[in-house]
Length: 324
Ligand SMILES: O=C(O)CCC(=O)C(=O)O
Ligand SMILES: [Fe+2]
Image (tube, rainbow, N blue to C red):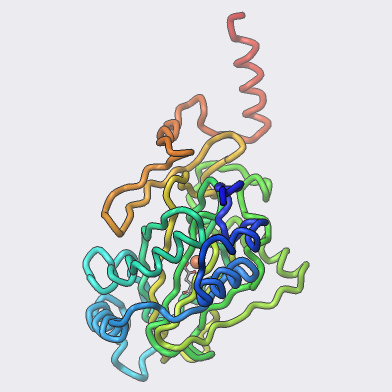
């Protein structure tokens, strides 16, 4: 069956129910696909026969990289640096989890394009991170071709700052500067999600949305859609660990960019060039198979400086002074 909408991930398509029948999904794949479509996330057992041993080795090799003394049952685990980005580059078990072929095959089927992992994060403790969508960190055009996979590397109870998310929020508007009336002024941000916090809060309040919390069993994984609102709960017991690995995936043949530093309507995109963990090669942005030219360098002409009124006056003056 030809896909009328190759620019929408299959699991997010309005034609999802009609199209999934032609994919030959197993019952378990069907359950995952339907959960992603309806709720924006899916929980399943991570498919790796060697997972137990990998988790043991990862904990052993990464523990010295964190600021806290994880071995001391009475130490406060919530202080100091609590995440290691891209440990896949030196730890082969982190790498193996990121490139797990069964997961890549599944994502390829569910999205309709080949997936590639481009970032890993390893946490020994909860993040206590504010609600956000990953789309504001790692956006794509066509939109929604990105997802995160969170893996529980121990049993995680309610006091260890478990992952939370708002089921169905993947259908809410995707945050962009245009949506919240913001312009990219080249301002440095603490986090690319900061400008959108009030907008998410307003939607949650309007819908009376209640977060769901994942108290997970070791070896369980959760995939979240690019626009699912999620974060890390407050950690009631600071002495607990909450070992997890997050792998972020993009899909082939897309434009990759960061919305907070972009003005989509003006064609100004803060492009990213993710490197695929699977083959170590960069993935330049592509549109319908063709590589997209790198972004325009910021010149005095296109740099956004001054107030909107001042920029309007400058534009008018430039027009007036233009030789006709
Ligand atoms: O593990 C968590 O608490 C959230 C992590 C997260 O939001 C992410 O890696 O995208
Ligand atoms: Fe996230």
